[in-house]
Length: 104
Length: 381
Image (cartoon, each protein chain N blue to C red):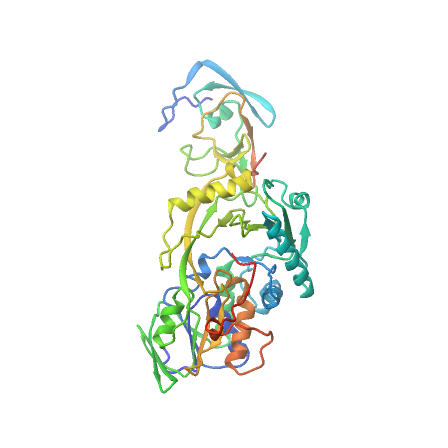
């Protein structure tokens, strides 16, 4: 399943333009204009982070940038709201564990 | 509300609470604490919460070291319901000139004499403690591994609850409005909720110390000044010590919950009771902090606040009884480092009030400002 329309963001998806980013070191294909979470969801990835206190699995929940359930470490930056952040070519996306690490 | 009390402490911050607890612990009855807002709502609750033992005078070394010993055992001493969140990640003090480093060398010698385990570090050694540190311009550092910080709300609440168990009454949202005296003696305190007859008053009013003293007709040379702080989002632990510099003018710590708390002193800040946050601070603080600790560029600021430093001419507190007014005690003018010495302040003030011998020699009397006996402490913010 692929998320094609977002209720709030005008994503300007372009299925003609395919890009590649990495998740946990694995290459993932995405369409230009879609969010990181949408691309991960399409690739069958449901667990985006481990909760901050008990490290329980957390996945896409509100999808509009409110709930912090989709926080991931993107290009070394922790707590990125992947449900509203557009994916870019070559992005390095990691699962966030706990409160997230700042990666140099 | 009581109509009579043995002593009325004005100020429900950490200083007032610590004094109240120590007086009650020594057996004093009928202690009342007045707080115009809620507990720790003033300078205590807005402070940077650092606990530093790296000082440059004997008195401050002893005050801070003995206070840290109490912080280390506070959960047991006060039988606290909630942990005070003491983190002893150390304080890394950075020097940015040869002169500053020379002063640090002297300080470390003095600190060792009074049992403080500080050490002088090269730039390389400082970077081993904080690998992300941008060492540009840094000439050296000192580090004391037992320095740290604690949660000021929890510490104050711990004192309040321990004091309440010993019979102390705290009246919050109760503002002292006047102190009535007669022939050099205190008669009563008038509040917006009623009057309390008493012969003893403690001024522990933090940012409002001058105003409370004036109610009793005593002039003191304290002034209040806004100091701003910001806090970031929480991330996993990455910064162990409090990083601080007098000359670069910054302090920054990561609390146990993962957020970074930081501030600096604006040299042009006017005297006032203003505690509004400013965008100027946000901008300057962000620049300063990300220059020194570049990894901070990757996280977001979530909130700002400000509190009052209550400053004396030598940036050292006044712990004294007024000469012209029997029973009027002052624990004021902490100049930005009251929280860290609150445990010993409570003990010393209780000793002073009960006429006991003081457990540390202090020279924090009010007269020092007139007699040119200022305390020359090199390590103040």
